[in-house]
Image (cartoon, rainbow, N blue to C red):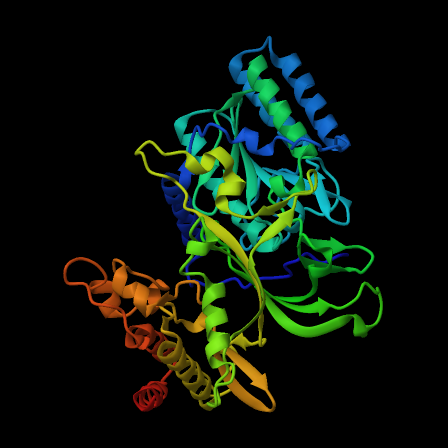
Length: 528
């Protein structure tokens, strides 16, 4: 059976009992509903409307699903509202995967309804929604949570469960840019659109009214007919049946400049609902279109894909990791010191070729969300920020810091990363601002173990730090006390290289008796 783009992910052991762990997950999901869900968002359904020029056949399963819905509702219109709501709930139970723990879940929770994705050709997918085949998050288009009533508590619980389970779709589908979902509470259906910073829930579609039923049927038809990017998939991250592998394509107006890479393995998947959704893959460049032989592949490199905060005009994007890496490569590529630096080979802001129009579309939250991007919440605030999806090809390939085989290797790797940090600060004027275990890699090359500092998404130039308001940045457990307490206000203190390195030492020192490592690293810093 074909593997998904994401094979597996680690499950943390919190040490809590099963009941306590489950209770904690529910409480966390309910808190996320209050923070992230924007109810009654006008314009959600329009995001699924097929673009002009789209010509596709309506999925047979969608036709069956629609006809079954109408037939069930017609038979229930003369009944009481309560009986009609029960009939709707029963309908979903009959036509979809119900109370199932799908493959790829990191807990024992069971979803109510799974709408599955059917492959149409090598590079597109459509929606199924009926029984058949493996129940897997890797093949799931969307989840629907069903509640008996439309009470406020049931509506809130439906959102909470949807948020909790949709995270598994992101974790198991590395080609998902965003995800759709449904809540069915009594006779009211709400379509939910998961963006990086918020969940936009549509106005309720009451299936007991002709207008609500029409909207709902239209949504199912649109999901079946619209382009794959409108369903949340990345058209340029696809499974090729002939070559039997996953491929990542970098589109270009000039076809001779198009680059394609074969996925070797998933280095880092994303199992978070919100944020950058950073993913990293080990890939090999395709040098030809041959379907056999190793000669078609070039150097093994890393592809990083992340939705980062950015300026809408790329020319004004002063915190662009691409610009930082280009400057580092320019200034330090011929550095005489024996230091490994991150190497940018290709990439920038991601774009894709629209299947129906043929146009190249830059992938940003503004282009994805349309009118919703400018919408405000009840407090007058914008619920989402401008983000640009950036896809970079980099080298060399490294391993997580935990892959060091001894204390000596750990000291050597961290010392290398510190020397790299110091050189970049001195020669390029770039302050990293997010050093943690995840951003230091182990590189084994030429029989030696080296350290590599990566991920400059939160970096800033020293010049900009002096001009702009000081801010709190970084991965929370690794932020220095100075940065946590004195990051804003009249007594704000500028961030320094020592702030970058303060808490990574403390966190590492907690794991075992490694105080000697901390002392050695501080000595290296003093010498730098």
